[in-house]
Amino acid sequence: MAPRSSPSLALPLLLAGCGSSGLDTRPSAAEVLDTAEAGVGIDRLDPSWSLPDEETEVTLTGRGFTGTAVVEFGRAAVTATIVDAHTLVVTAPAAGVETTVDVTVTTDEGTATLADGFTWAAEEPIDTGDADTGDTGNTTGAGKVGGLVQYQLLQIACPSCLGYTSNLQVVATAGMHAPTSKSWLSWLPPKGTCTTNPAPAAASATFDDAGSSLWLEYGPDDHPEVSVELRPGSDHVYVADGLAAEDFVRTAGYRVEVEGGADVPAFSVTEAFFTPDAISALTPAEMLYTEPRQAFSAVIPANRADFTWSSSGGSAAFAVVLDVYHPKTSAFLGELFCLDADSGSLRIPAAELTGYPDGALLVIGMYRYATAGFTRPDNASTVETLTTFGVLGTGVLSN
Image (cartoon, rainbow, N blue to C red; front, side):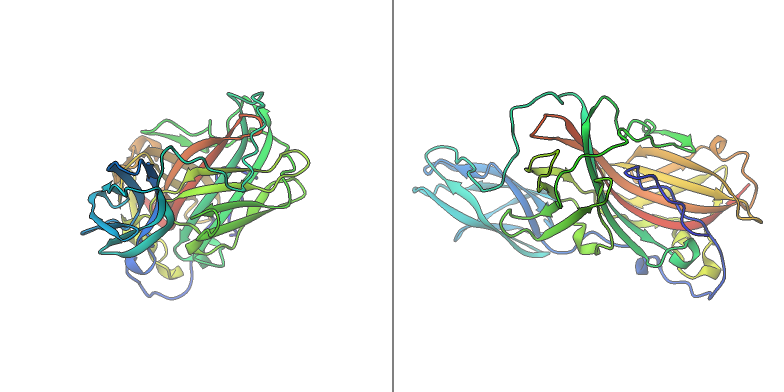
């Protein structure tokens, strides 16, 4: 069966159909699981300036901060304290003069440099970059929702079983609309609960012209490491699909750049949203078998439906989604969406699985994601953001 499609701009967690035939080779989980992006990266410094004659404690946010770390402000090297793999704390030296230097981080994972990353000045520098922030002083949208930005990476075990042509999907969608009191994310259940057949509802049925391009960018304004261009359809929903895994940088802050059109002026918002970390070492690992003949090897007991994953925790939430199909006819029977904290384990209550037949085929989605929002400078409305890292596999229900 072909994948079930999701409504435009709804949460893209509606899963795929199933089937079985083919070879019986069993790869290891490591062959189909992605891991967090290797190497070192610097997202930002806080603060990014100091008075010339003062030493200043600075927090660096990025990735690959493991082992030992040395931070260089220009040619001045200082030892950093590693808080976690994404956070360093260091004391910036006193320069004695007003100047701006590159900041370089070297750890066991490698080296990265943030050009013009730190400034010594007599007063806090004012950003006079060329980017148009779009701030019009209009606050008519304050307290309302004025758009949605989604960014998802989905890894698919046995794509041929589920009607996909690739084992990786990276998709970005966005839409700007008139401010509304509705939310794109209001349908999500509270953490620690499950919902059956969730029905995401659109906060707006129409979208505004924001120009011919909208960009999601990571890295410096002038030389971004990643620049994903979304193009609009006739309905002014902006889409970029067929992206590479490298376009979805883990645990990174992305900037949203809007070209500006008839309805929405040009604007730029830094750190508009942050991506979650990858998923690795999940169980049951059998859900990741990639050959169709072995695709439904993961047995999920109805009275002990346990799922685990390696987790960096933090503020991200985690969902386990089961699409259930009849064991003989493959007819779709329902979807179960369970949401909890990103703790590394989740058990679906047995009561949620009663009523489904023994041997029911399962398409299993495990998703780490984060919801947030940023303020549109043109009307002060909130653009909701949803970033998701997901793994899609298969199993069979056992009563």
